[in-house]
Structure formats: structure tokens, C-alpha cells
Amino acid sequence: MPVLHKYVDIERFYVLTSINGKIITFQLSAEGERKLRSNGIDSGSKFGRALLIDLYSSGDAYTHGSAPGTTGPVVDPRQMQLDFTDDTEPETMFPACALCSSIDDLHLVEIKDKDHYASLLCQKCRAIAASTINTSLPLPLVTRSILGRLLEMNQIPKVDDSVTAYRKVLDQEFSAKWAAIAKDGKKQQLDFGIDDGKQGRLIK
Image 1 (cartoon, rainbow, N blue to C red):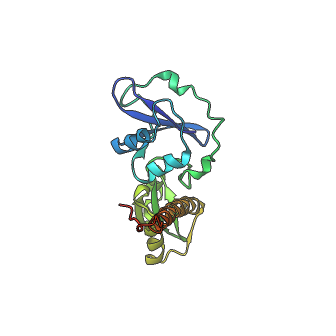
Image 2 (image 1 turned 120 degrees about the vertical axis):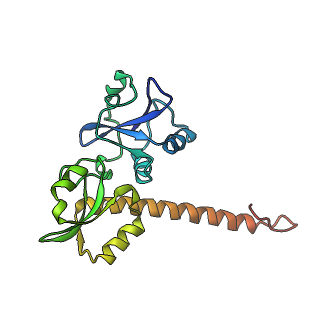
């Protein structure tokens, strides 16, 4: 499972997790730190991979492909000695480059070559495939609706496995949000309909 850690020399935090057998570092925006810490997640705490994906999707968690402390704030080297064997959520739920499995700087791209399809590519693989790329969007900007509109407007007939997997993540997030809204709406209806002998009450 992802683990939140604090830098040694500044009051900022980062996340370590295992993806494709490698320990990956995610830097956090101030808002990303706030979201984690306001939910009781502090330095040394483990949290669900789905939450990290949500932070990644909103742009509040990002990676530059370098180990922590090599180009920025200082980390405690003991924090790199981790065992992620208790991670119950599959690593495959995290988006990755279709060609090299990197998670660095992913874009949703439209490939127009012998085949016409959508894929997820990292910066290096986009450079290699540059002559065949028609459209390229940073993945944190890609919502469920934007993905659907891009496929429809550009008449992209198919997507590869990397996009299929990410679309499942977006669909799960969409379903979870609507379930929460439905649950909250039902609660409000019940509260409004309570007869206490006087009158129903509104939730403000």
C-alpha cells in the first residue's frame, strides 16, 4: 500500500508505493497533502491505492521519475527499506505507459498510423511515436466525459489495453461519486419526511 512520508529538511510530504515491482515516489501538491492529512493520514501511515489514483487524477500527486532526495528535499534513507507485500489492491489499477509501463508524465494520445486508436504513453515513448500522434492530453486532465468526447469527436475506433484499464478506473470513480450523491439525497428525503408532530425539517 502507498505510504505517506515527511521530508527531513522541510515541512512537506511525499508518497512511496510499489508499481510493477519498483518503488515509486510521488510528490504532493499542498492540496494533496491537505486531503491526506485531513483524513487522518500522517507520516508513516498507509492508505489505499485508489486514493493515490484519485490524487494523481486531480494532479495533486505526481512523479518526475527520480528517487526522492536526488534532486530536491532530503529524505530519511530508512524509509526506502520497505515491504509492500501487504498491498491488497492490484498494482495494475494504476495507469501506465502502453509501451514501457512507465508512469511518468502520462498522456492520453490519439495514434494515427496503420491503425487508428487511443493509448497512454509516457514522455519518452511519445517522443518516439511523435510522427504518429494526432492528439495528446495530459492524463490528469482526462475525465470520464472528456475521454468519451475525444473518442467520439475524433472518430477513434478503438483503444488499447492501457486506455481500457484507465477507463475502468474512471468508471469506478464515477459510480462511487454517484452512489455517494444518491445516499446523501436519500438521507435528505428521509430527514425531510420525518413527522415529529410539528412539521418536516429541511437540512441546511
